[in-house]
Length: 267
Image 1 (cartoon, one colour):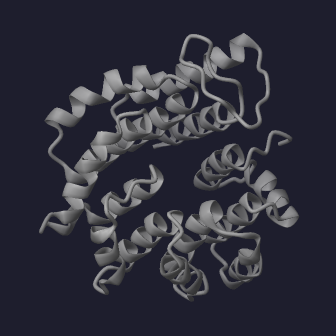
Image 2 (cartoon, helix red, strand yellow):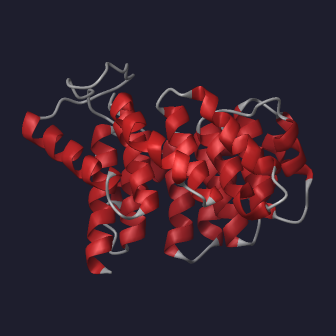
Image 3 (cartoon, one colour):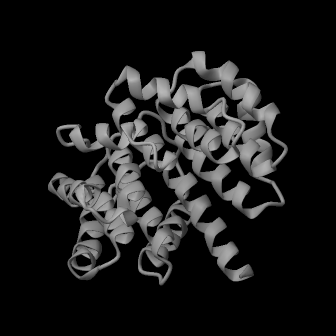
């Protein structure tokens, strides 16, 4: 278990660094709105961590590694590794992850895999389908996601559908997220905060500050702190910096990921 945590933290830090540095010269060029320059040895170490994770036995860390490698300009490498796996994978949640990373790496046609899973009568992969569609900004014609948003049996499914539709500018979807970020339930509130971190607005800062004070669980509070940091809040950025040294390995990992997304190159 300790080794797994170390690997997870190392992957998170590699994602952080390659999320804020210029792309690997051996990979295709990708424009970045902010970057820092690294010594070649540091860059090579980050890429080595990510490539080992991509080929590792743990499925979801491999998908996070694929995301980071695509961000570093190595989309061709990602597609070569993942495409054969999608052809043989039977687990719908894993199929969503594979299809998502193929879409992110440039094969937009693979969005159909996620939409087909969402349309399935078997609900096992529905939440993952909604989340993955959100992450790669695909909604098809929006019909399936609007249905997922409207249903009341699975709140997580509704929230992730709201994320996908909200990213496309749906006022109704954003209203759902802004309502649930005020929930007393930590699960729904932190999911809403996680989404608003990326598609919210500075006017969401008061609700996120209130959420940070509402919960005692440090991990739940970290979701709100990182969302505040993503929206440019000074207190949130300070909390994000502190979370990079948290004794909780999950908080450290999430902080590393959010620091990269927030372009917090000063940390």
